[in-house]
Structures are given as structure tokens and as C-alpha cells.
Image 1: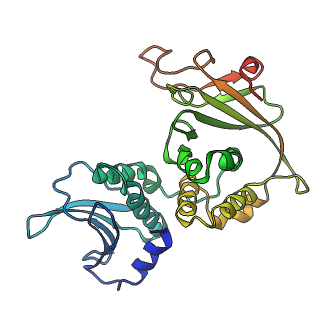
Image 2 (image 1 turned 30 degrees about the horizontal axis):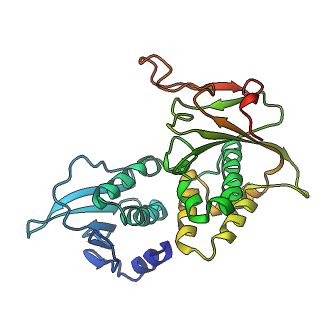
Image 3 (image 1 turned 30 degrees about the vertical axis):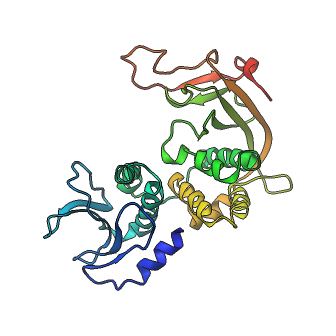
Amino acid sequence: MIFNDLKEKWDNIPAVGNGFLKLGLNHPLDLQIGYSINAYKSFVVMNTGVIKNIPSSFAVKVANIQLKNSSWILEFQLVHVKFEEEFLRLCWDMIEYSFAEKQPLNALIHRYMTWQKLLQYENKSVMSFQRQKGLLGELLYLLEIMNSRGIEDTIDSWTGPDGGDQDFVFSIDWTEVKSISLASKTVHISSLQQLKQENDGYLVIYVLESTTAGENRVNLVSIVNKIRDKLLDNARYLDRFELKLYKYGYRKSHEKEYYNNQFRLIEEREYLVNKSFPKLTGDDVSVEVVSCEYDLSLAAIEKYRRR
């Protein structure tokens, strides 16, 4: 099922209290959508048993309810209509993410928990310039590796928007992507986990300089559309890509503003992050240090550069 299928099914249910539709999916969980007794949009997982300590958010109320037949359900209710798009995407993501998991209910709940920050706060403003620049770097890398890594593997590996410690995590390696200006002498590492992995990985840096419109320029909207074009024949992965964009904070309604920020791609640099690469992780600092940000000298890590 793709995202528009779910939206269409919901649109065809009368918006009255206590009306539900069983989703006809080959899914290990019994899932239903509809409207609760108070006419809120509601997503229900049937026959869950007792589940404790699942928090509600500002936008979504979560309840574990015992029915008259003594079975238990898990219900997600949209309580603030202004978050309807987020709620629909949340429901689709929970369905997709839990589909092939060995413990689908646990996976579904885990996916809901990763949405907590997004659902807790109303933040629909245009992304800051630096956040746009950071996303542009990640998308340039994503577009670059789609041919060599494969479309599906590439989209699945983009874990940054889902809260991953690294931007891209593959089965045998990983990549952290940074965007800097030409005058930068350092690159910022934002946590003790950002360069920490058992396997060797890569630090990829895009040197991007803000400029005016013209030939040989890149901007966020054009790169997003290039990736969309590559996914046109794969509706499910197009939905997954759009969902990750959404989690990052990218909204189609803001594309006009994003298009105005043009960049000149000056250079791409790639560094091998292995055991000898200079970095701070939880293994390298005192146990009393629980969080840390630091800057790496670009000149000092030049010997680890691959291209």
C-alpha cells in the first residue's frame, strides 16, 4: 500500500463517530482506520493485549483499551486537526515499518516513539538556511550513490531523518555527510555518536557557496525533483523518500523559498573514518561526559582523505 491509498481509504469513510474500516492488507497485525466515538480520526491495532507506558503527544492521544469481549486494542487518535498530515504519514509509516518485522507490534510502537518530537511541537516554518544547506548535502550524496548502491538500498540507508546517529548506514559501512563553505577551516561534529560505528565508514564533505541563480548552480528543490524523477516507477520508495523529507522538515509549500537559495558546488571531499581517525566517542572520554560537540581541523585530517 502506498501513502495515497491510505489517504483515499480514509477519505471514503463517513466522518462520524465509531465508524471503522478493516485494512485489507497482508499484514501480520489486524489494523483498522476510521473515526472514534468523538469523531476524531483514529488508527487502531486490534488484539494487542495489555501495553503500558506509551505516551500521548500534543497532537495524538494513545490509549490501550479493553473491549467488552475482553480483548485489548491500541488506539491512536488525532486530537488536533492541524496535524492531520503528520498523523496520516505517521500511520502509513507505522504500517510500512512493522510489515516485515519479527515482532510487528513492538516495531509499530517503536516507530510511533520516533515520531514523538515531530508530533510534540508545532514547527511548520521554513527551514533555516543552515538546515537547508545540510539537507542539500545529504541529498547530493543520496543522488550520487543511487546508481551504485541501488535505489531501494539507498533510500533505506538514509537514516538521518529517522534519528540515526549517522546520515547513511549500510550493511557493511556508513557515511556522515557535512556541508561547509569554502572559507571553512574546520568541520563540526555534533555528538559522541556521530562518528562511532564498529565498521569503518566515511565522512563526506560538500563545499557549497551561496550564490546567485545561473548555470552550474544547485538548489534544494532541483535536487529533490531529480530524486523524485528517479523514483517515479517505484511508488512505495517515492513515498518513503517523501516521508523522510517530511521528517527532516521539508514541505512542498515552502519550495518557492528554497528555490531562491542557489549554491555553487565547489568540491566534494571524502575521508576514511577508521580506528585511527581522530574522533571523540563514548569509549574515548570519561564516563562523566555524556554529551559533546567538537570541531575537526580539515588540514589535520587531510591524510585520511580518499578523494
